[in-house]
Image (tube, rainbow, N blue to C red; front, side, top):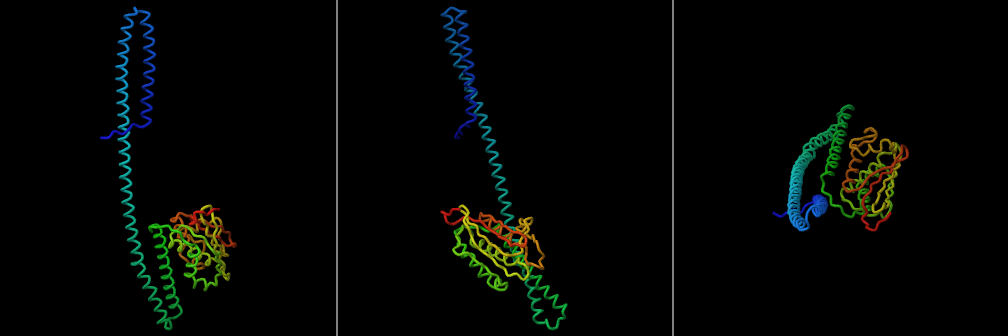
Length: 333
């Protein structure tokens, strides 16, 4: 078995003990020599000094040997303890990893169940309610039509909530490969996806040209920007035309993408709450939604190694920002 070298602390302790012993022993021998030469004849004193020296060498060698053995034994015990602790830690890590893998498998199974088993009845309720309105709407009285319309709306809202919950949970499980992504292309893709929504609200979206590139996961970044832009055009005062500015600025090797709106604004006391799941500052009847959009923004940006934030005041609009690593290695503040 290969001998493990002693630790520096153990070696230093052994050397200190040896030096102290040698110093004390040499002092004692010097005093003893003086006494012998004063009390005995020179020849007899010389013989005794010789045997005394031999005895000193033998005793010193024995003591040093014993001290070394004690030091090696202490080191061996310390090494065994460290090995046991390392094995226990490895066992705990393996156990925790197995638990996480099991939790992940259960979460995936739950997500599949939610996506298929729960959404299927909702789609059926929504579909049949819509068919009821289309095929038998003329024969229903006002209350009947109201009930059917409420069924359609409730099923639609629940389906949207399930979709957002799935998107939120998948952000924690998705394997992300971060690559350079052109922010200009991301914003253009989001605007195409929201074309009908922007036209319906008559929203004016101004995008700064030549947006920089960042290190990100393309699909997640599109989802993040989509939620930010939807948030910007949704929370406006009644009768107000949404106006949104999208621009970016370098931040010492990073890039901040800003989304500024002319909405109702957010009280500074509640600005942290808006990033939490299901936290709503306004009723769903006034501003429909699931309350998860900004949670998806934060989770997605953090998974990509970035940060999120906002500046806002009630009645003065909001400016949300996300910060990611710049794809330009030479980017400076």
